[in-house]
Structures are given as structure tokens and as C-alpha cells.
Amino acid sequence: MPDIRPLAHSSALVLNATYEPLGVVSVRRATILVLSSKAVCIADGGGILHSERTAMAAPLVVRLTHFVRVPYRPYVGLSRRAIFARDGGKCAYCRGSAETIDHVLPRSRGGGHQWDNVVAACARCNHTKGDKTPAELGWRLHVIPAAPRGISWRVLGHRAPDPRWAQWLDLAV
Ligand SMILES: [Zn+2]
Image (tube, rainbow, N blue to C red; front, side, top):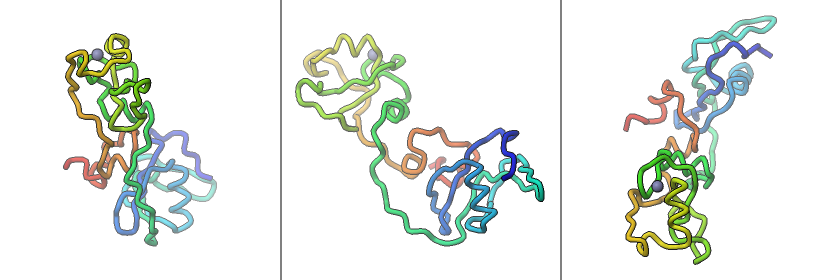
């Protein structure tokens, strides 16, 4: 197996045969796909992989040689990191730096742990809010919480994209 340690980047974007982004894998996994002819490297990350017999450019983006049918996953998994990423790390109530997750309609009052009822919040707002609703406090939400959408969310989840993937992820749009 090629030595991948000297590489600055450690993950590669995988595209379907149709160029539709499918997901992110380790450079090691992408290299195996290329070496086994399951994928071709369409952009390399600048590093060189050395093995006993050969040297090859470290893949940054690979495209599968055969189309794979993947189940469409419209739903992005709810996690603390994903909520912080969606809300840009800012408190939904005061726009300060968020450290906690708040349930807009408190769980004690039947609020669900779901995308449209969770926001990032600073500790002070979260503590002050307690088991009240924003309306009871006269507070206004700066964001309407909703499940994140878009191809980059579907492919990357909460991960920050490598800027060099932008053209394949339609990030400029
Ligand atoms: Zn706050």
C-alpha cells in the first residue's frame, strides 16, 4: 500500500460515473479505488504516493468507472456538530458565540429533538430561556430552524469541504 503520510490533505471526493458527488473517502480508500480500476483520478491533490513498485499522484477527486445507484438520502443526520455547522456557530437568540444546543419548544413541554426545533445557543441565553418558549420571553429567533438542504450537505454533512472540491459540489451557487 502506498505511503500516504506526507500528504497535506487526507480525504478525497468521490463522484459517480455521471459526475454526481457521492461522498468523501480517505485518500487511502480513493487510491485503492483507482488502483483497482473502479475509479479514475480526475484531480490530484499535489502529493505523490510512493509504493515499492510505483508512484502515483494522490487523488483529490475520483470518478467511478461504473455508475452506481445510490439510495437518495434527503435527510441530514441530526448531531451537535451538524447543528453548529448549520447555524454557523452563532446563538439563534443573540448572535453571540454558541456553546450549547437549545430546543426552541422545550423538551419538557413536548418539543422534539428534530431539525426544526433545535438551534445553537450561547450558554447565557440557554440558561435564561430555561423551559420557556421564545414568545413567552419576547425573544425573536434570528434563524428559522430547518433541516439543511443541498448537495454539499448531502455529501459532506457537517464536514468542511476542501475548497478544491467546489466546482464538483456546486458550492459557488
Ligand atoms: Zn445568546
